[in-house]
Structures are given as structure tokens and as C-alpha cells.
Amino acid sequence: MFFFEKKSVFGLYCGVFGLGYDICFFPTLYAQYLDNMKIRQPIKPQPDVQAIEPPKKPAMPELAVFCLFAFMITLFGLIMLYSTSFVTQGSTYFWKQLTWMLIGLAAGTGTILIGSKRLSEWSPLMIFLLEILLIWALFCKPINGARRWIQVGGMTLQPSELGKVVITLFMAKFLSTRTRALESEPFRKVMFPSAVWVGPVILLVLLGEDLGTTVLLGSLYLLMLFVAGIRLRYILPIALILPVGAYFFIKAFDPMRWARLTVFLDAETYRMTSGYQLWNSLLALGSGGWTGVGFTESRLKLLYLPENHTDFILSIVGEELGFITLLTVIVAYLILVYVGLRISVKARTRQGMLIAFGMSIFIGMQALINIGVITAAFPTKGMPAPMISYGGSNLLACLIAVGCVAAVAIDTAIPDYPDKLLDWAGKRLHISRSSAAGEAGQPT
Image (cartoon, rainbow, N blue to C red; front, top):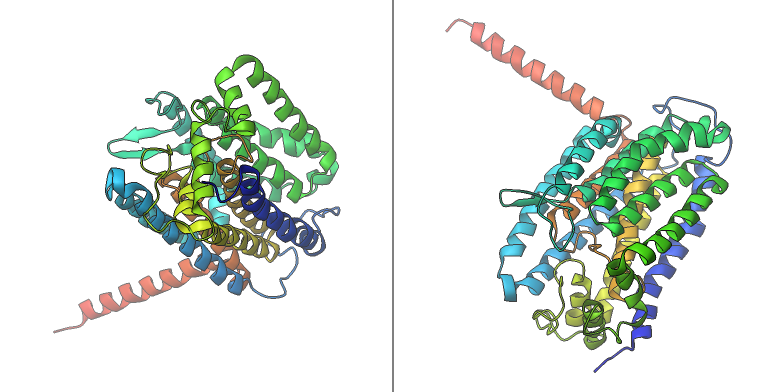
């Protein structure tokens, strides 16, 4: 029945993504961060409005590619969502996701008009509002045993998804104003105060039974510290101690999570119990072969694979459209993140560089975790595929992130363009009002 054995699925799907991730990002782009941005060298304090180093070329070509791939992935997600849900839900999920896509496009456009720098300056207020939403979610009705969602009328919002954007904006603002402290007193003046701001958000997400997003937010926080210039000797102990501590805590006090953390090692043995979802995901991927069984022809989506329209939608992509199409999706994610990091390298300011880096890397990490989960490379966790899985909050966060990266790219060609846009609009408005007043004062 299988076209690939389980280990082959792991090697082909997750291996391709992981290898491409390493080849594309770390050797090439990080070297450019070191050479072009000089972030590992002692930095003289300077206002963020000054350019770190004049970019050789504006990032407009990268912007076009970035927006194109973001749109293509989102459109592909809508098509696959219709295929995975129309049998059991009709077109309900499709129209809801389309509505969220339009909201996300409006939010992303607004982000571009406002400018990512100005949004970053507002991030302390955003963190305060986000904490209120996360506390609110803890008192809402749980869904699948987790308290991650706020339900208002017919709409459902998951605040932890917006946390990825808010933490990125806050860390970009925070780190860009502490360039000297990054070298002189990194723990006392950078790591500790930033943890005071970001830590409660991550803790509230954890209290909402969202371990996957907790890990992603913590990883994003540490990566932004490292890219900003804090040395590994300060970050590595945290990155090692916390996972080990979580491992022993879950093993001792949380049997349900412990089962989910270990079942991925042998999904076949537990295929009728705790490994049911993962086993059916592997069945879907294996039965798809190279070209798939045909669009809308999936058998596993007929109530065999739970959450097939959300966290496991890429399993249905592999079954219906095959390994070649799923590999294309993986490559599209790689290109999207790579181009986003290229925009980050070309950013005009340190704050812009950190914003573009954080927004691009959280999309990449989320895609990597999702692909690892559906192929049994990682423990089963609720992590949607960016811009493809059903979920308005995730789609909204990703499209806002796309808008932030686009704003950084535009700023390389037109410095401080939001202020210039406001000045232009103000002049036009003044002229139109003056003209109207003059016409009103003319005798008839």
C-alpha cells in the first residue's frame, strides 16, 4: 500500500526542507549579516534613523518575488482547503478562510502604509493588549483541551498567533536601541529586561496548553538576540537547560503530553490509540506516490485523518497531488524565507533588519515544524502550515508579517516613505480644501 516506507517519508520530506534550510540560510546569509551589517563587532551607539551601511541596491526585486510567493502559497492554501473540507463541511471553511484572507490583505496593506518602524515603536502597547487577550482566552471555553481561542459571536481569534508578530516588533525596537549594551552588559541591560517583557507572553501561551507555539516563540526570542549581537555563551545555556527541564517535567507530571512526545518514534505500534492521527498522516503521504491520487480524490480525509484541514493539510496535499507537488510547496517556503532574509540583509536600519529577519524566520520555523510533524520527524503538535492551513488567526499573522517585510524593502528604496506619504497626502488635502474654499468664495 505504501509508495514510501516511513523512514523514506522522513528522509524525503523533512530532509529536503532541513537540508535546503541549512544550505540557503546559515552559511550564506549569516555570513552576509556578519560582513554587511557588522553586528558581531563592537558597535558605536547611533540613532536608529541613521543607516547602518548604505545598501548597494534597493530591495525592490526581492520585494516583488517575496510578495509573489506569499500570494501563490496563500492561493494554493485556499484551493487545498476547499478540497479537504468540501465533503464534510461544504464550502463553509473556504468562505471563512477567504474572509480572513481579505482581512489579512487589508491588515498587510495597512502595515505597509503605516510602516514597520512605526508599528515597532507601538509594540510595548501591543504586548500589553496581547497579554489581556491571552488572559481572556484562559477563561474561554476550551477546544480540544486547550484554552487558546477567544470566541466572539461567530468569530474565533487565537491571540498566540499574533504573539509571533508582536514579539518580533518589540524585540526589533528593544535591540536596536541597545547597541552598546549588546557588547558591554548583554545580560543585565538586554537579556533580563527583554525577558521581563516577553516572558509573560510566552508563559501565558504555555498556560493555554499551546506547547508548540511556546517553543516557537522562545526560539524566535533567542534567535533575535543572537542575530542582534549577543554571544552564544549567554544564549546557549538557556537553549539547553530549558528543553531538558521541560523534558523531565513532562515525563514526571504530564503523562498525556509524554505519550504525544514519544509516540512519533513508533507510530505503527500505537496506530489505533495515541498514534492514530500520525499513522494516518503517514498513510496519506505514502499512498500519494509521486503524482498523487488526484485532486479532491483523497480517501484519508473522509474522517480518517483528524485535523486534515488544519495542522495536517499538507498530508492531504501529498496524497492528492503527490510528492512532486509537496516538494514544490517546500521549495516555495524556502524561497519565501530566503528572499525575506535577503531583504533583511539589505535593510536600511538595524531596526528594519531585525523586523524582516524575525518575520521571515518565524514563517520558516513554523513551516519546518509542521512538515516535521506530519512526517513523524517531530512530536505531534498543533502547528499549522503557514498560509495554507485553515485558521484565520494564523493567516492574519502571516499576512501582517509579509506586510512588515514589504515595508522594510520599500524603505530601502524610499527612506522614511510613510512620513513622505503623509506629507504628500497633507499637501494634497490642503490644496483641495483651499481650492474648494476659493471656489465657494467666487461670486456667481
